[in-house]
Length: 135
Image 1 (tube, one colour):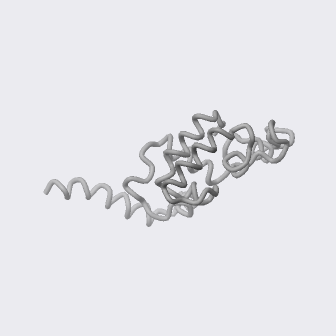
Image 2 (cartoon, rainbow, N blue to C red; image 1 turned 90 degrees about the vertical axis):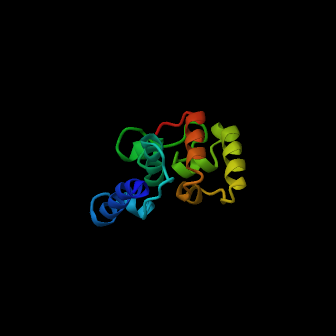
């Protein structure tokens, strides 16, 4: 009886997740619920914003009229999620640690691969917090 009590709420939530039409942008990124996928609201918010690009990086802020050019203050190229995770010189040391950790998990070091991986999510969160990126 006890295992059923633990399984039932997740199963009901899973059915609702698949049938409700709201949140389709999120469902494109995470088509199925995973119990261990994103453990906290803060973590899921960080990953979702990075996946969609709707965050406080200069490129997006420029698109909504809140930044003049949308360029990285350090590199003078568009400050996109890909730029910050893969190339920005401001975050070289944090990126090196993220890359090492992600590759140890068997994940290719590319922004789409990292953001799709639930195993890398907490490491991405650590990268964001360590580097002070505005999300």
